[in-house]
Image (cartoon, rainbow, N blue to C red; front, side, top):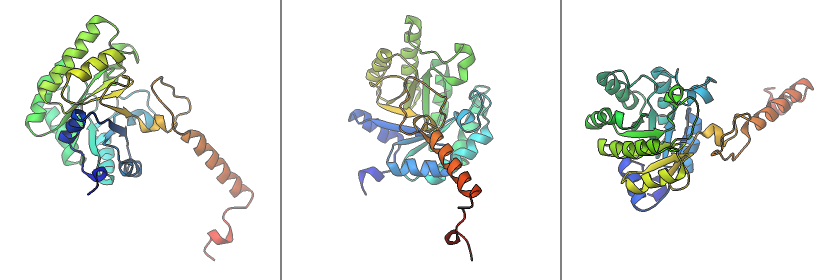
Length: 270
């Protein structure tokens, strides 16, 4: 079996960090996108609660539901043979009580087919993460700009600018590692503190807007594909202008139909 087709697991990601091999995650929310990303050979696919914005067109992630997340995770998992599929636990699916958090996290594995879950929060989430890991649910942490806390932050603000913020991030990263996280997402974090955390931890850091020193990178597939022509973030590199291309295709199809050029005889059942 080629190295590219070896099934990705949390221990393998940790091994990649030890070897200084970069780790690549992308988001996906549907079967065919996930299949294409898996065949590209990336290490992980996150079924992010960002689907609430990029799939359902809502302003933020807060109203994403467990039913939505499980449904999309199931579609992604059925398309994937190699990448590690991680289900994103939505707002209030794990903060209310420990039993509810365990039950909801377990649904991602039992019903969604995911291999792990991701949840947001720093050291305050350590005891919950420890319990999830104890019952057999691998957990990816997420610190820095945590979108489910967007109202607390007062917007999409870079983290790690103050000494208090830097200390919280560093202490939280160590606490999450100690609790059993197999990796930690660092979002919108100053480059220097992201580098410090990465050097300190034995588990991989996966950056999004956290500079080049992290062990890997994750991006929202819609962003790097240019699906939303009006969206801009400093850390996003667009590899394609899908929104523009979709408009061009729709316009061309419309013109072909209106002038009678579609369907042709060769495209019809005579």
